[in-house]
Image (cartoon, rainbow, N blue to C red; front, side, top):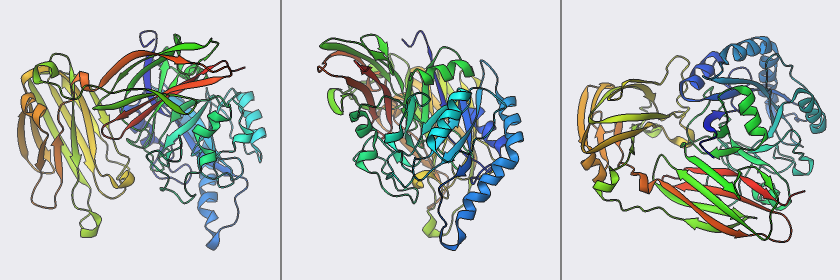
Length: 497
Protein backbone atom coordinates (compact mmCIF):
# COMPACT_ATOMS: atom_id res chain seq x y z
CA UNK A 1 0.00 0.00 0.00
CA UNK A 2 2.90 2.39 0.64
CA UNK A 3 3.67 2.25 -3.08
CA UNK A 4 0.24 3.70 -3.89
CA UNK A 5 0.51 6.57 -1.40
CA UNK A 6 3.24 8.70 0.14
CA UNK A 7 3.64 9.14 3.88
CA UNK A 8 3.54 12.84 4.80
CA UNK A 9 4.25 14.30 8.23
CA UNK A 10 2.52 17.31 9.77
CA UNK A 11 1.05 19.10 12.77
CA UNK A 12 -2.54 20.33 12.62
CA UNK A 13 -2.86 21.73 16.16
CA UNK A 14 -0.45 24.40 17.40
CA UNK A 15 -0.43 27.96 18.73
CA UNK A 16 1.46 31.24 18.79
CA UNK A 17 0.85 34.89 19.71
CA UNK A 18 -2.41 34.96 17.71
CA UNK A 19 -4.04 33.57 20.82
CA UNK A 20 -2.46 33.11 24.24
CA UNK A 21 0.71 31.46 22.97
CA UNK A 22 3.99 33.13 22.01
CA UNK A 23 5.86 33.76 18.78
CA UNK A 24 4.82 35.23 15.45
CA UNK A 25 2.84 33.31 12.85
CA UNK A 26 5.61 34.09 10.35
CA UNK A 27 8.02 32.19 12.63
CA UNK A 28 5.58 29.26 12.92
CA UNK A 29 5.31 28.99 9.14
CA UNK A 30 9.09 29.17 8.70
CA UNK A 31 9.63 26.43 11.29
CA UNK A 32 6.92 24.23 9.76
CA UNK A 33 8.43 24.59 6.30
CA UNK A 34 11.85 23.64 7.69
CA UNK A 35 10.88 20.11 8.74
CA UNK A 36 7.21 19.28 7.95
CA UNK A 37 5.16 18.51 4.84
CA UNK A 38 2.03 20.26 6.12
CA UNK A 39 0.60 22.11 9.09
CA UNK A 40 -2.54 23.87 10.27
CA UNK A 41 -2.46 26.88 12.56
CA UNK A 42 -5.34 26.60 15.04
CA UNK A 43 -5.45 29.85 17.00
CA UNK A 44 -7.34 30.08 20.30
CA UNK A 45 -10.77 31.52 19.50
CA UNK A 46 -13.28 31.26 22.37
CA UNK A 47 -14.43 29.55 25.57
CA UNK A 48 -18.19 29.98 25.84
CA UNK A 49 -18.64 28.28 29.25
CA UNK A 50 -15.52 29.57 31.00
CA UNK A 51 -16.13 30.52 34.62
CA UNK A 52 -14.59 33.47 36.40
CA UNK A 53 -11.22 32.64 37.96
CA UNK A 54 -9.50 33.80 41.10
CA UNK A 55 -7.75 37.12 40.61
CA UNK A 56 -9.29 37.67 37.18
CA UNK A 57 -7.05 35.08 35.55
CA UNK A 58 -9.66 34.54 32.85
CA UNK A 59 -8.29 37.70 31.22
CA UNK A 60 -5.30 35.66 30.04
CA UNK A 61 -7.64 33.64 27.81
CA UNK A 62 -9.96 36.50 26.86
CA UNK A 63 -7.07 38.67 25.68
CA UNK A 64 -5.76 35.76 23.63
CA UNK A 65 -9.13 35.27 21.94
CA UNK A 66 -9.24 38.97 21.07
CA UNK A 67 -5.76 38.79 19.49
CA UNK A 68 -6.92 36.08 17.08
CA UNK A 69 -10.15 37.93 16.25
CA UNK A 70 -8.30 41.18 15.51
CA UNK A 71 -5.59 39.45 13.48
CA UNK A 72 -7.77 37.00 11.58
CA UNK A 73 -7.40 38.83 8.27
CA UNK A 74 -3.61 38.63 8.46
CA UNK A 75 -3.75 35.00 9.59
CA UNK A 76 -5.80 34.11 6.51
CA UNK A 77 -3.35 35.90 4.20
CA UNK A 78 -0.22 34.34 5.71
CA UNK A 79 -1.65 30.82 5.63
CA UNK A 80 -2.88 31.24 2.07
CA UNK A 81 0.51 32.55 0.93
CA UNK A 82 2.34 29.67 2.65
CA UNK A 83 0.48 26.96 0.75
CA UNK A 84 2.36 25.54 -2.27
CA UNK A 85 1.16 22.36 -3.98
CA UNK A 86 3.77 19.59 -4.24
CA UNK A 87 6.01 21.43 -1.74
CA UNK A 88 4.14 22.38 1.45
CA UNK A 89 0.51 22.50 2.54
CA UNK A 90 -0.77 25.10 5.02
CA UNK A 91 -4.27 24.98 6.50
CA UNK A 92 -6.39 27.62 8.21
CA UNK A 93 -8.01 26.70 11.51
CA UNK A 94 -9.01 27.68 15.03
CA UNK A 95 -9.55 26.02 18.40
CA UNK A 96 -12.87 26.19 20.24
CA UNK A 97 -12.74 25.62 24.03
CA UNK A 98 -15.55 24.10 26.05
CA UNK A 99 -15.64 22.81 29.61
CA UNK A 100 -18.77 20.77 28.86
CA UNK A 101 -17.98 19.35 25.44
CA UNK A 102 -14.19 19.31 25.30
CA UNK A 103 -11.92 21.41 23.13
CA UNK A 104 -12.21 21.05 19.34
CA UNK A 105 -9.79 22.02 16.57
CA UNK A 106 -11.47 23.19 13.38
CA UNK A 107 -9.37 22.77 10.22
CA UNK A 108 -10.61 24.22 6.92
CA UNK A 109 -9.85 22.62 3.54
CA UNK A 110 -9.47 26.03 1.87
CA UNK A 111 -8.77 29.71 2.51
CA UNK A 112 -10.85 32.78 3.44
CA UNK A 113 -13.07 31.26 6.10
CA UNK A 114 -14.67 32.86 9.18
CA UNK A 115 -14.28 31.97 12.84
CA UNK A 116 -17.43 30.56 14.43
CA UNK A 117 -18.38 31.35 18.06
CA UNK A 118 -21.15 28.87 18.97
CA UNK A 119 -22.20 27.98 22.52
CA UNK A 120 -22.92 24.31 21.81
CA UNK A 121 -20.97 21.57 20.07
CA UNK A 122 -23.89 20.73 17.77
CA UNK A 123 -23.85 24.27 16.41
CA UNK A 124 -20.10 24.00 15.86
CA UNK A 125 -20.67 20.71 14.03
CA UNK A 126 -23.29 22.32 11.78
CA UNK A 127 -20.77 25.06 10.92
CA UNK A 128 -18.08 22.46 10.12
CA UNK A 129 -20.44 20.43 7.94
CA UNK A 130 -21.35 23.57 6.02
CA UNK A 131 -17.67 24.45 5.50
CA UNK A 132 -16.50 20.84 4.85
CA UNK A 133 -14.14 21.42 7.77
CA UNK A 134 -12.60 18.89 10.15
CA UNK A 135 -13.62 19.07 13.82
CA UNK A 136 -11.05 17.22 15.93
CA UNK A 137 -11.30 16.76 19.72
CA UNK A 138 -8.06 16.74 21.68
CA UNK A 139 -6.66 16.10 25.19
CA UNK A 140 -9.45 13.56 25.30
CA UNK A 141 -8.78 11.91 28.65
CA UNK A 142 -9.26 14.89 30.96
CA UNK A 143 -12.41 14.49 33.09
CA UNK A 144 -15.60 15.36 31.28
CA UNK A 145 -16.68 18.80 32.42
CA UNK A 146 -13.04 19.87 32.73
CA UNK A 147 -12.44 20.24 28.97
CA UNK A 148 -12.12 16.51 28.40
CA UNK A 149 -14.03 15.11 25.42
CA UNK A 150 -17.77 14.50 25.77
CA UNK A 151 -18.06 11.11 24.05
CA UNK A 152 -21.86 11.20 24.32
CA UNK A 153 -21.84 14.04 21.78
CA UNK A 154 -19.42 12.31 19.38
CA UNK A 155 -20.46 12.21 15.72
CA UNK A 156 -18.09 10.99 13.02
CA UNK A 157 -19.71 13.08 10.27
CA UNK A 158 -17.02 15.77 10.48
CA UNK A 159 -14.87 14.08 13.12
CA UNK A 160 -13.22 11.16 11.34
CA UNK A 161 -10.22 11.27 13.69
CA UNK A 162 -9.37 12.17 17.28
CA UNK A 163 -6.11 13.41 18.76
CA UNK A 164 -4.71 10.48 20.73
CA UNK A 165 -1.46 12.26 21.68
CA UNK A 166 -0.17 15.82 22.15
CA UNK A 167 2.05 17.73 24.58
CA UNK A 168 -0.63 17.07 27.21
CA UNK A 169 0.19 13.34 27.00
CA UNK A 170 -1.28 10.04 25.86
CA UNK A 171 -5.06 9.49 25.68
CA UNK A 172 -5.01 5.85 24.59
CA UNK A 173 -5.65 4.56 28.11
CA UNK A 174 -5.08 5.62 31.72
CA UNK A 175 -2.14 3.27 32.39
CA UNK A 176 0.03 3.88 29.35
CA UNK A 177 3.17 6.05 29.23
CA UNK A 178 3.11 9.86 28.92
CA UNK A 179 0.61 10.54 31.67
CA UNK A 180 -1.11 13.93 31.88
CA UNK A 181 0.70 16.44 34.09
CA UNK A 182 1.74 19.35 31.85
CA UNK A 183 -1.40 21.44 32.40
CA UNK A 184 -3.73 22.18 35.28
CA UNK A 185 -6.84 20.34 34.09
CA UNK A 186 -6.14 17.15 36.00
CA UNK A 187 -5.18 13.52 35.39
CA UNK A 188 -6.40 10.98 32.83
CA UNK A 189 -9.76 9.38 33.54
CA UNK A 190 -10.47 5.81 32.40
CA UNK A 191 -13.91 6.50 30.91
CA UNK A 192 -12.49 9.33 28.81
CA UNK A 193 -9.81 7.32 27.04
CA UNK A 194 -9.65 6.10 23.45
CA UNK A 195 -9.79 2.53 24.72
CA UNK A 196 -13.16 3.10 26.40
CA UNK A 197 -14.54 5.07 23.46
CA UNK A 198 -13.74 2.20 21.09
CA UNK A 199 -15.41 -0.20 23.54
CA UNK A 200 -18.55 1.96 23.23
CA UNK A 201 -18.58 1.23 19.49
CA UNK A 202 -17.49 4.67 18.32
CA UNK A 203 -15.59 4.84 15.06
CA UNK A 204 -12.62 7.15 14.54
CA UNK A 205 -9.02 7.21 13.40
CA UNK A 206 -5.94 8.44 15.22
CA UNK A 207 -3.96 11.64 14.83
CA UNK A 208 -1.41 13.41 16.99
CA UNK A 209 -0.25 17.01 16.97
CA UNK A 210 1.89 19.10 19.26
CA UNK A 211 -0.52 21.67 20.75
CA UNK A 212 2.70 23.66 21.13
CA UNK A 213 2.02 27.09 22.65
CA UNK A 214 5.44 28.40 21.72
CA UNK A 215 4.90 28.75 17.97
CA UNK A 216 6.80 25.58 17.08
CA UNK A 217 4.79 23.24 14.80
CA UNK A 218 6.04 19.65 14.78
CA UNK A 219 7.82 19.95 18.13
CA UNK A 220 9.69 16.68 18.70
CA UNK A 221 8.14 14.54 21.41
CA UNK A 222 4.94 16.59 21.60
CA UNK A 223 2.99 14.83 18.84
CA UNK A 224 3.14 14.36 15.08
CA UNK A 225 0.63 13.26 12.44
CA UNK A 226 1.37 10.94 9.53
CA UNK A 227 -1.00 10.53 6.60
CA UNK A 228 -1.01 8.12 3.68
CA UNK A 229 -1.77 10.65 0.97
CA UNK A 230 -1.89 10.39 -2.81
CA UNK A 231 -0.13 13.76 -3.19
CA UNK A 232 1.31 16.68 -1.26
CA UNK A 233 -1.60 19.07 -1.61
CA UNK A 234 -4.45 20.16 0.62
CA UNK A 235 -7.20 18.21 -1.11
CA UNK A 236 -5.28 14.93 -0.91
CA UNK A 237 -4.30 15.44 2.74
CA UNK A 238 -7.85 16.31 3.82
CA UNK A 239 -9.16 13.29 1.89
CA UNK A 240 -6.63 11.04 3.64
CA UNK A 241 -7.70 12.36 7.04
CA UNK A 242 -11.40 11.96 6.20
CA UNK A 243 -10.67 8.37 5.15
CA UNK A 244 -8.75 7.82 8.43
CA UNK A 245 -5.61 6.83 6.51
CA UNK A 246 -3.65 8.31 9.38
CA UNK A 247 -1.42 7.36 12.24
CA UNK A 248 -0.24 9.17 15.34
CA UNK A 249 3.34 9.58 16.51
CA UNK A 250 4.93 10.90 19.67
CA UNK A 251 7.91 12.24 17.70
CA UNK A 252 10.14 9.80 15.82
CA UNK A 253 9.04 9.33 12.21
CA UNK A 254 8.16 5.66 12.17
CA UNK A 255 6.92 4.40 8.78
CA UNK A 256 3.85 2.16 9.05
CA UNK A 257 1.89 0.18 6.48
CA UNK A 258 -1.02 -1.64 8.20
CA UNK A 259 -3.88 -3.47 6.47
CA UNK A 260 -6.62 -5.92 7.39
CA UNK A 261 -7.73 -8.18 4.55
CA UNK A 262 -5.93 -5.74 2.25
CA UNK A 263 -7.86 -2.70 3.53
CA UNK A 264 -5.79 0.28 4.73
CA UNK A 265 -5.71 1.59 8.27
CA UNK A 266 -8.93 3.45 9.02
CA UNK A 267 -11.07 1.40 6.64
CA UNK A 268 -14.46 -0.16 7.41
CA UNK A 269 -14.84 -3.69 6.05
CA UNK A 270 -17.12 -6.70 6.14
CA UNK A 271 -15.63 -10.06 7.08
CA UNK A 272 -16.44 -13.56 8.22
CA UNK A 273 -14.99 -15.39 11.19
CA UNK A 274 -11.35 -14.60 10.41
CA UNK A 275 -9.26 -11.82 8.88
CA UNK A 276 -5.59 -11.43 7.99
CA UNK A 277 -3.72 -8.44 9.39
CA UNK A 278 -0.50 -7.45 7.63
CA UNK A 279 2.08 -4.87 8.64
CA UNK A 280 5.38 -3.37 7.59
CA UNK A 281 7.11 -1.14 10.15
CA UNK A 282 10.36 0.80 9.69
CA UNK A 283 11.69 2.79 12.63
CA UNK A 284 14.34 5.52 12.86
CA UNK A 285 15.61 3.96 16.08
CA UNK A 286 15.71 0.50 17.64
CA UNK A 287 12.32 -1.20 17.60
CA UNK A 288 11.05 -2.70 20.85
CA UNK A 289 7.76 -4.33 19.86
CA UNK A 290 4.95 -4.24 17.30
CA UNK A 291 1.52 -5.02 18.75
CA UNK A 292 -1.84 -5.68 17.14
CA UNK A 293 -4.72 -4.72 19.41
CA UNK A 294 -8.21 -6.10 18.88
CA UNK A 295 -11.10 -4.74 20.92
CA UNK A 296 -8.75 -3.48 23.59
CA UNK A 297 -6.64 -6.65 23.90
CA UNK A 298 -3.20 -7.38 22.49
CA UNK A 299 -3.64 -10.37 20.15
CA UNK A 300 -0.26 -10.39 18.40
CA UNK A 301 3.27 -9.29 19.25
CA UNK A 302 6.47 -9.36 17.26
CA UNK A 303 9.96 -8.44 18.45
CA UNK A 304 12.91 -7.51 16.24
CA UNK A 305 16.32 -9.09 16.17
CA UNK A 306 18.52 -6.92 18.38
CA UNK A 307 21.98 -8.53 18.29
CA UNK A 308 23.28 -7.75 14.81
CA UNK A 309 26.86 -8.47 13.78
CA UNK A 310 28.80 -5.72 12.02
CA UNK A 311 28.76 -7.27 8.54
CA UNK A 312 24.96 -7.66 8.68
CA UNK A 313 24.55 -4.17 10.16
CA UNK A 314 26.20 -2.46 7.20
CA UNK A 315 24.95 -4.76 4.44
CA UNK A 316 21.93 -2.46 3.95
CA UNK A 317 21.39 1.24 4.70
CA UNK A 318 21.48 1.94 8.43
CA UNK A 319 20.69 4.90 10.67
CA UNK A 320 22.49 6.92 13.32
CA UNK A 321 21.44 9.77 15.58
CA UNK A 322 23.52 12.83 16.46
CA UNK A 323 22.22 14.53 19.62
CA UNK A 324 23.33 17.75 21.30
CA UNK A 325 22.33 19.75 24.36
CA UNK A 326 22.45 18.66 28.03
CA UNK A 327 24.39 21.32 29.97
CA UNK A 328 23.86 23.03 33.35
CA UNK A 329 20.53 22.45 35.02
CA UNK A 330 18.40 25.20 36.54
CA UNK A 331 19.49 24.65 40.14
CA UNK A 332 23.00 25.79 39.21
CA UNK A 333 21.65 29.19 38.10
CA UNK A 334 23.70 28.84 34.91
CA UNK A 335 20.85 28.49 32.45
CA UNK A 336 21.70 29.77 28.99
CA UNK A 337 20.93 29.27 25.34
CA UNK A 338 23.79 27.42 23.66
CA UNK A 339 24.27 28.13 19.96
CA UNK A 340 25.59 25.18 17.96
CA UNK A 341 27.19 24.85 14.54
CA UNK A 342 28.56 21.61 13.08
CA UNK A 343 30.15 20.75 9.76
CA UNK A 344 29.75 17.02 9.18
CA UNK A 345 31.60 15.14 6.46
CA UNK A 346 31.49 11.43 5.71
CA UNK A 347 34.17 9.37 3.99
CA UNK A 348 33.68 5.92 2.43
CA UNK A 349 29.93 6.31 2.58
CA UNK A 350 26.87 8.40 1.62
CA UNK A 351 24.12 10.33 3.40
CA UNK A 352 20.80 9.10 2.03
CA UNK A 353 18.38 11.05 4.24
CA UNK A 354 18.37 13.67 6.99
CA UNK A 355 15.49 13.88 9.52
CA UNK A 356 15.63 16.69 12.13
CA UNK A 357 14.15 15.97 15.59
CA UNK A 358 13.59 19.46 17.01
CA UNK A 359 12.39 20.32 20.49
CA UNK A 360 10.15 23.40 20.88
CA UNK A 361 12.29 24.97 23.61
CA UNK A 362 13.88 27.29 24.27
CA UNK A 363 11.66 29.96 22.77
CA UNK A 364 13.45 32.44 20.54
CA UNK A 365 11.75 34.54 17.89
CA UNK A 366 14.84 34.90 15.73
CA UNK A 367 16.95 31.76 16.15
CA UNK A 368 16.38 28.89 13.72
CA UNK A 369 17.54 25.31 13.25
CA UNK A 370 19.01 24.76 9.80
CA UNK A 371 20.21 21.59 8.04
CA UNK A 372 22.05 22.17 4.78
CA UNK A 373 22.80 18.94 2.90
CA UNK A 374 25.52 20.31 0.62
CA UNK A 375 26.21 16.92 -0.99
CA UNK A 376 25.74 13.24 -0.18
CA UNK A 377 28.87 13.46 1.98
CA UNK A 378 28.51 16.92 3.60
CA UNK A 379 25.96 18.29 6.05
CA UNK A 380 26.05 21.67 7.83
CA UNK A 381 23.98 22.07 11.01
CA UNK A 382 23.02 25.26 12.85
CA UNK A 383 21.01 24.83 16.05
CA UNK A 384 20.45 25.97 19.63
CA UNK A 385 19.52 24.33 22.94
CA UNK A 386 18.76 25.15 26.57
CA UNK A 387 17.33 23.56 29.69
CA UNK A 388 14.80 26.34 30.08
CA UNK A 389 11.58 25.64 28.19
CA UNK A 390 12.46 22.09 27.18
CA UNK A 391 9.42 19.81 26.83
CA UNK A 392 9.27 17.59 29.92
CA UNK A 393 12.62 19.16 30.89
CA UNK A 394 14.51 17.67 27.94
CA UNK A 395 16.86 20.31 26.48
CA UNK A 396 18.25 18.25 23.61
CA UNK A 397 18.03 18.54 19.84
CA UNK A 398 18.95 15.75 17.42
CA UNK A 399 19.04 14.59 13.83
CA UNK A 400 18.68 11.07 12.40
CA UNK A 401 20.87 10.25 9.40
CA UNK A 402 20.26 7.36 7.04
CA UNK A 403 23.61 6.20 5.69
CA UNK A 404 25.03 3.83 3.16
CA UNK A 405 28.49 2.60 4.00
CA UNK A 406 30.72 -0.01 5.56
CA UNK A 407 32.62 -0.70 8.75
CA UNK A 408 35.28 1.71 7.48
CA UNK A 409 32.86 4.59 6.92
CA UNK A 410 34.06 7.56 8.95
CA UNK A 411 32.02 10.41 10.43
CA UNK A 412 34.07 13.57 10.81
CA UNK A 413 32.53 16.33 12.90
CA UNK A 414 33.88 19.86 13.05
CA UNK A 415 32.20 21.88 15.80
CA UNK A 416 32.30 25.65 15.30
CA UNK A 417 29.96 26.64 18.15
CA UNK A 418 29.71 26.74 21.12
CA UNK A 419 33.45 26.04 20.92
CA UNK A 420 35.92 24.78 18.35
CA UNK A 421 36.47 21.03 18.46
CA UNK A 422 36.66 18.06 16.14
CA UNK A 423 35.98 14.35 16.37
CA UNK A 424 36.13 11.32 14.12
CA UNK A 425 34.33 8.01 14.56
CA UNK A 426 34.08 4.95 12.34
CA UNK A 427 30.92 2.93 11.88
CA UNK A 428 32.76 -0.09 13.33
CA UNK A 429 33.33 1.93 16.53
CA UNK A 430 29.75 3.23 16.63
CA UNK A 431 28.42 -0.29 16.15
CA UNK A 432 30.03 -1.19 19.46
CA UNK A 433 29.39 1.97 21.49
CA UNK A 434 28.01 5.46 21.42
CA UNK A 435 30.52 8.31 21.53
CA UNK A 436 29.98 11.21 23.97
CA UNK A 437 31.90 14.47 23.78
CA UNK A 438 31.85 17.65 25.86
CA UNK A 439 32.14 21.32 24.92
CA UNK A 440 34.16 22.13 28.00
CA UNK A 441 34.59 21.27 31.71
CA UNK A 442 31.63 20.47 33.95
CA UNK A 443 28.82 21.50 33.68
CA UNK A 444 28.97 22.62 30.04
CA UNK A 445 27.00 21.13 27.15
CA UNK A 446 27.57 17.76 25.50
CA UNK A 447 26.95 16.04 22.21
CA UNK A 448 26.76 12.39 21.27
CA UNK A 449 26.83 9.98 18.37
CA UNK A 450 24.40 7.22 19.29
CA UNK A 451 25.10 3.63 18.32
CA UNK A 452 24.13 2.82 14.74
CA UNK A 453 20.68 1.35 14.13
CA UNK A 454 20.89 -1.58 11.68
CA UNK A 455 17.88 -2.27 9.50
CA UNK A 456 17.08 -5.69 11.11
CA UNK A 457 16.77 -4.08 14.56
CA UNK A 458 14.49 -1.29 13.34
CA UNK A 459 12.10 -3.13 11.01
CA UNK A 460 9.32 -5.68 11.37
CA UNK A 461 6.91 -7.06 8.80
CA UNK A 462 4.53 -9.96 8.75
CA UNK A 463 0.99 -11.29 8.68
CA UNK A 464 -1.27 -12.91 11.25
CA UNK A 465 -4.77 -14.40 11.32
CA UNK A 466 -7.27 -12.85 13.73
CA UNK A 467 -10.55 -14.42 14.84
CA UNK A 468 -13.60 -12.16 14.51
CA UNK A 469 -16.51 -12.35 16.98
CA UNK A 470 -20.11 -12.52 15.84
CA UNK A 471 -20.53 -8.78 16.42
CA UNK A 472 -18.32 -5.88 15.31
CA UNK A 473 -14.61 -5.68 16.02
CA UNK A 474 -11.83 -3.08 15.70
CA UNK A 475 -8.14 -3.80 15.12
CA UNK A 476 -5.22 -1.37 15.29
CA UNK A 477 -1.43 -1.42 15.37
CA UNK A 478 0.83 0.03 18.06
CA UNK A 479 4.60 0.38 17.68
CA UNK A 480 7.05 1.02 20.51
CA UNK A 481 10.70 1.92 20.14
CA UNK A 482 13.43 1.23 22.70
CA UNK A 483 13.81 4.99 23.26
CA UNK A 484 10.17 5.31 24.37
CA UNK A 485 8.63 6.76 21.20
CA UNK A 486 5.29 5.28 20.12
CA UNK A 487 3.10 5.18 17.02
CA UNK A 488 -0.58 4.23 16.73
CA UNK A 489 -2.11 3.27 13.36
CA UNK A 490 -5.80 4.04 12.93
CA UNK A 491 -8.10 1.05 13.51
CA UNK A 492 -9.70 -1.03 10.83
CA UNK A 493 -13.40 -1.41 11.70
CA UNK A 494 -14.87 -4.82 10.96
CA UNK A 495 -18.63 -5.43 10.52
CA UNK A 496 -19.61 -1.95 11.73
CA UNK A 497 -22.96 -0.75 10.42
